[in-house]
Structure formats: structure tokens, C-alpha cells
Image (cartoon, rainbow, N blue to C red; front, side, top):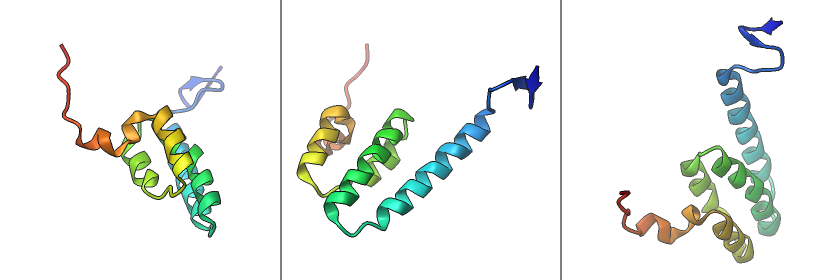
Length: 96
């Protein structure tokens, strides 16, 4: 049985992209409503993790700038070294 040109239960890539984008926007808007820096930083953590797992490093870095809690920033840099400010200024290594 097929649904929309694929197998039952499969989704089209455009549908996945739309769902990811909509979820990202909704999550960011919700986190933006939080006045407390701790709670906002804590809310941004899984959003940034979602971006990194989705290879959306540019958005992750943009959101990371808004994480003010040092221990949360450190935890995220430990998990994703690409978020480190040093990673932006480090020279690129050649791949052999």
C-alpha cells in the first residue's frame, strides 16, 4: 500500500523539512517568552541540540549566543564543540 507515492508511514522529505522548520520556530518563540535567563537558557538547550542533530549549525550558533548560563553553555560545548567561539576562529584543517 502506498501513500503519496511512498510506503505507508513514510513522509515526503518536504513534509519532514516543513515539520522541522515549524517545530523550530514554535520552540524558539516559546523560549523567547521566558523572562528568566536560567529557564530561557534551559529551554534553548534542546532546541540547539535539535539544530545540531539536524546539521543546522548556523541556527544553532545563532541561538547559542542567547544562552547566558555558563554551565549550560559549557555542557553544550562539551556535546557540540562546533558551538565554541574558538571553533569559529580556528584555522580550517585540511583533509587528506
